[in-house]
Image (tube, rainbow, N blue to C red; front, side, top):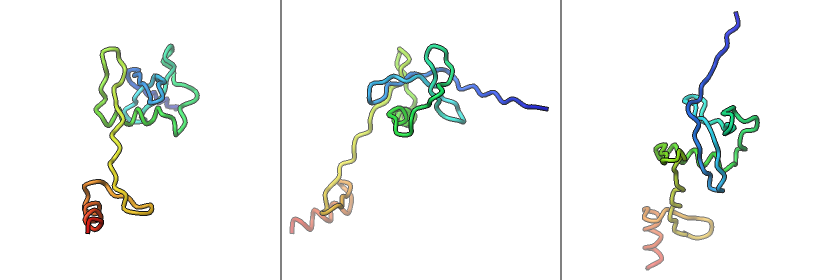
Length: 109
């Protein structure tokens, strides 16, 4: 007997990546996002490359609660860059950390 396994990815979502391109995709609960052709809903033959801005947009969208606006576009924002303190050479520490405070105290004396 042959078995056919059919997966359904859910509704088609649209997301605008940081570079301005709008991607259509399905968010499968097990397999994750798959880009689809917006007119047919079929999976794209060529999926985005590993370093595509699409992946960052989807990861941020997932982490920020999967919000969608009235027009159906996924809402997400870039996280703030961490504030770093230069300790010297190639060494940095997060501002407010014990290491940064200690280095600041040593420079003051």
